[in-house]
Structures are given as structure tokens and as C-alpha cells.
Image 1 (cartoon, rainbow, N blue to C red):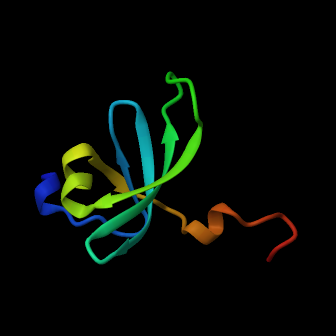
Image 2: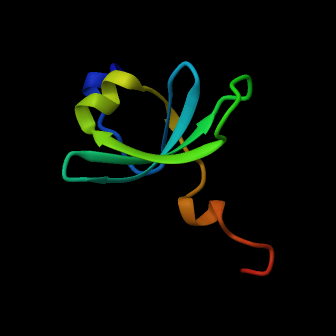
Amino acid sequence: MMNKDRTPEVGDIWESDLHICYVVRVMDNTVYVIVRNKPYYTGIKYQTASCSDNLFKALWQFKCKSKMSLDDLFKTENEE
């Protein structure tokens, strides 16, 4: 599916040449993500970012749908 036809959704994983991102929110034509560097790139490991839907689709390529929710990413072993 082409990026221009794909609408970013919460839980999507997108990537660029140097980064991978997890979509955490989409609101009012703005996409909010957590960005992680790919292993071969040094510098900041994680950061948050946001941009317009159109700019997002121009900069990133859809990779897959995440198998876990954002809440599951931050669960501790004491939570059930």
C-alpha cells in the first residue's frame, strides 16, 4: 500500500532510513510518535515528535502494525 493511501493509526510502526517510530496518537491531522534510532545510528535513543499527516507520510514508510498496545509496552512485572 502506498503511503499516500495509508492513514497513520495508533499502533502502527513506520520507518525512515535512520529511525523507527510507533504512532501513539492521531488528532486533528497531526501524528504523534515515539521515535527510536535504528541500531547502527548513534545519538539520542528515544524521542517524541509530531507533525502533520501529509509531512509524516512524505518522511516515513509504513512497516507494520504493532502486536502490542502502548499500555503493554510500559507494564511492570508486578502488574496483572
